[in-house]
Length: 98
Image 1 (tube, rainbow, N blue to C red):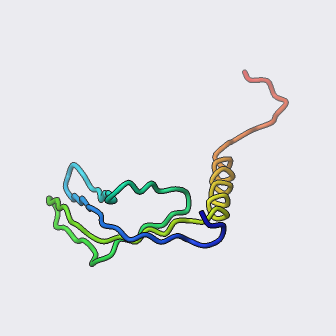
Image 2: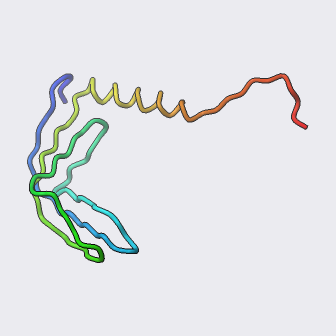
Image 3: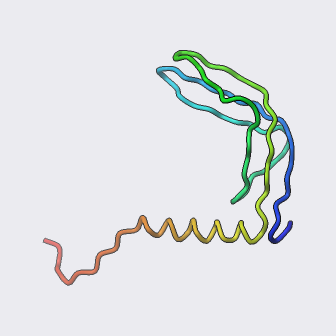
């Protein structure tokens, strides 16, 4: 694992897209045993997928996976934990609850 630089992998993927009354989703499943971590980036190559309402499609595409270095992973984990604390609401008051 590199400290500052990114490792780049090329692989294939399966894309499942549905646009209907029950579902609106796009799922990407990478080929092989590639585990993604904090800061990793996945770029799917090819034209944008546009579906008419009420349809679903499954496609094969190429992807480029850029793995984050150790420093970037550490930074992202730190930022994520700090952003989580923004959700906390703590109040200090001397009033007793009624």
